[in-house]
Image (cartoon, rainbow, N blue to C red; front, side):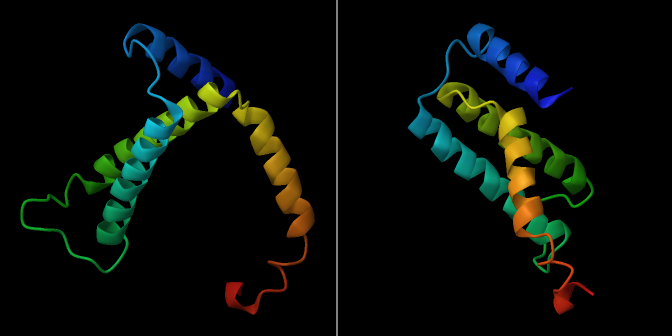
Length: 112
């Protein structure tokens, strides 16, 4: 699925199953909540934080994929609501990074 297809699919889902978009402020808060859930799992799966007793480590990577998809879904909702073409935005962002960081990372001793 391309980014454009994802934006169209989410828009269709919202208009049928979801009834309508939450407002932009609500979706921003939901995005922060979902990012927090990704952060919680990252800290436990890849970081030094241990799982709580009721949490199950076995399904953590599956849960992480689902939480990342939740973040992407809400981000796409916000892009759709604000008229952002994420394909074009990503292209422009990579161009910016390629110019800005052309030598920056190659010269970073910490990355060697």
